[in-house]
Length: 528
Image: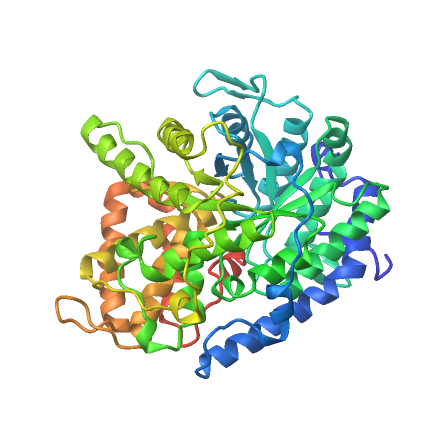
């Protein structure tokens, strides 16, 4: 085998061979040759920026790109089938979930290879099969245990695939002896197997891009898109992307990100949960910017409100959509409890749509009627709110975007963080990337907030509202107590079968480490 060839370390079933065809693997190999080395350079640049923040600097708008921010330019026109995205649902790429999400009363299903998907080899390969079959309109599923049959209804939601972030490797594929970027694998296989079907249906190949921190990373994706379109003889703009603004550094780079991808980008999204996680991670050395309990860090906090309003103003000034964030609630069976949940969701979405967002996210189809009614109130028959330019707004400054949050740190908040992180990590290690926990649909982002909050409280010796100082010893005592509580909730059999002990060890390791673990999914990947 030549050093330039791709080495696949897992056995291939007939189904998997239909995805990893010689032609698809050749395309992926070509992308690795041309673009994988730059990923390493981009990740090193991230480290350098973080070192500066750790040394006392704060993120800010880049004076070197002021001309882009002040220039008079627009992104390419938005394709017709991407103009109306009032309501989007997200979830992993397993077969039943794909069918249910496409059948839901939503405009878009974002099929997630990243935060809602545990990157097991089988999960990723099956995911590519499922999305290929969905695009072809030939997807069905039989749940023999429940005696249920699932199939696609007419006029399903529009399918958009979210690929993995640049930081995530794919260890089951090696190029020159090293794991390839997971993002390239997800992108290459999805594009290769779906572009003919989608263009034959007068559509394009649509992606969500996560975790960008700098416009140089957006430029990398632009280069990947241009190369791919030229290679397969497709017009520029066949590939379209929505970029998640879910890192603190990226909020200072929104004009530049739009400009770097201007032939391919259609909008930016407020990835609020990852954004909160990134606020903690980026400002980890800044004792004056430690967040309170996760439960009080809502979109009404000044730094999050500024982020939402600036994203809308930036996008609409450039002709791009401004997508709102995730409502992670799950409907409750008790009618009174459910009414409380739906009222919270309604208030959240009223704020987004009244601010000028063009659409928003939900994690459960049961929320669709409530959110549809709010969208109808603000948009009516309009596809979007691109005309809302927020020209009356005072300029949003770096200080606004970095404003410390008011609120308490409580023992109950710390205990909740521990239980949520423990249960999510256990699920992730067991192959599930998206799980309902205590009435919320949790994915990697919310688990990241839970564990990094505690890490930061320990590092800065913060005090809880009961006067107790947060230390490693306190964390471990609470972890042992909450682990026993979770064990009682799930039962001994599930505790043993679903890697809870491994999850407890991993949570202890990354929460008590001297250096903050960048993403829990990186050490967690070693267990898969």
